[in-house]
Amino acid sequence: MDRAPISLVLHEGAPLRLRSGLSVRVRPVGPADAEAIQAFVRRLSDASRRLRFFAPIRELAPSVLARLTESAGRPGLVLLAEAHDGETCSMVALAQYAPGEDDGTCDLALVVADAWQGLGLGRALMEMLIQSACDARCERAVVDVLRDNEAMLALARAYDFAAAWSPLGSTVLRLVRDLQGAPSADRSRISTATAPRARPVAAFATL
Image 1 (tube, rainbow, N blue to C red):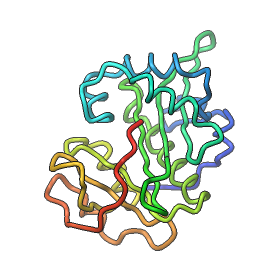
Image 2 (spheres, rainbow, N blue to C red):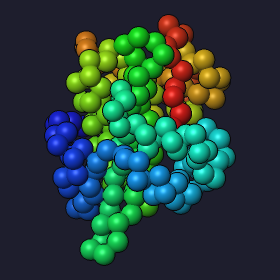
Image 3 (tube, rainbow, N blue to C red):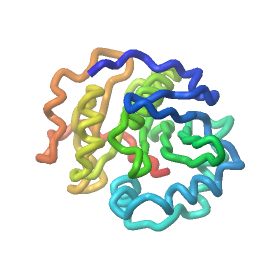
């Protein structure tokens, strides 16, 4: 896969053109985005919400929404992607990296609107999260994924994440990537089979 770096100037709202030819605007989340984020989560399919939040939620709890929209000035990064049709603007993706409890570890997460999945937006956001985490000198990136989340497993495999033991139960895979050293050697280790046991790292910070 071609993984040419994506300029982080996109965080300031420059247009991002996807391989489908569609364009979105990617920018940091702000306090005024609470309503748009909640509406975005409500529009997700039941399957997409379960895969992202590990539970059949309908919307975000107020405390979770507050943590997202009040992220400015705190360590980490929360991004949203917006699509414009000339008259209206619609949120189509949400992505985050946040410091983990384990020193040097950061947690990554993203979710893309159902109609926008498979167009390269998730890949672009993963690129941005990894680059931002590297710039922040994080040592390891961690993603916790349900074992039946095939799209996220494939994306993590493409970015050299390797499976490790997860403290979140048998239905979850913990995927880890070294950000400061060489990429993981065996991307085929990411599968729905039992993952090899590795040193536990910080639990995933749910959005």
